[in-house]
Length: 321
Image (tube, rainbow, N blue to C red; front, top):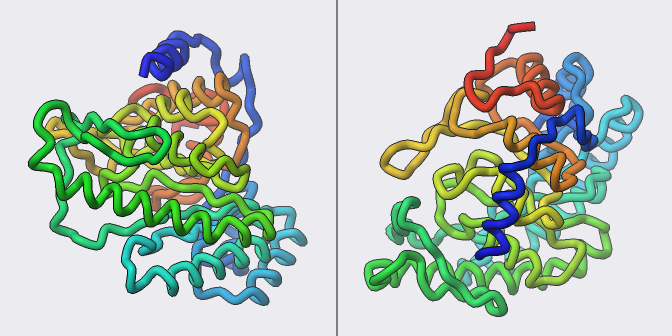
């Protein structure tokens, strides 16, 4: 853990801003499909591309959407495969088939990344510890969690068991999917999804990605999903080589250790610190806006200011231009 602490300390001490150490970034919307309406949203507001998410699309429809995108100089940069219930034995085979379809969809769209959440909680009654108490320990080779809090872990035995079950199922599923991902040239980008405690720390998530030792398994960092566990910029410090995409949103960390959605630029996320981390650690990819609280134009303005390092640590004001 000292290595991670040193990395974070170096990050926080960094005084460079976006103009001093630029990293090329591209902004994107998220939409079900690329049609005339979505294309107009992109072109009218200066977005570079789009992340699509409709898993019912056909390969032929995806190829047509790619042609439409290329004809209009926009990029379908990622496909959001989303949740898969690989840790549900009765659903495993059908979920592998669906994930395989999503990988082939991504390739047909011309996207080189597919967002994947390779587990879904089967038992909704399993509860984890409060985020403030969450201090997981795990075997870096097997990824088996041994503790989730300091002291007595007996109250969380079911949680630890569910965590390890999800991890084993995810490892198995990703190994099954890697051949088709490699064939298609599509990176499986595991997301730190909100609403669950699994894989809620950058140390574990980095170990999970590195476990596969493949350029086709990386990480999709959502800046808001785990704000109650650690600052988003710490993920960039710990996982500089693993993060390939970013989702932008905002949340407020609550006194009880939980979170709630917040207006963009007005929550607990320090976008100035994140921009410095992007520059310091060399992230140079796509950033998708994942909130609908403002207009496309306002979101585009926020992204432009964020990329330039002009979003303050707190209190962003829309419409100030």
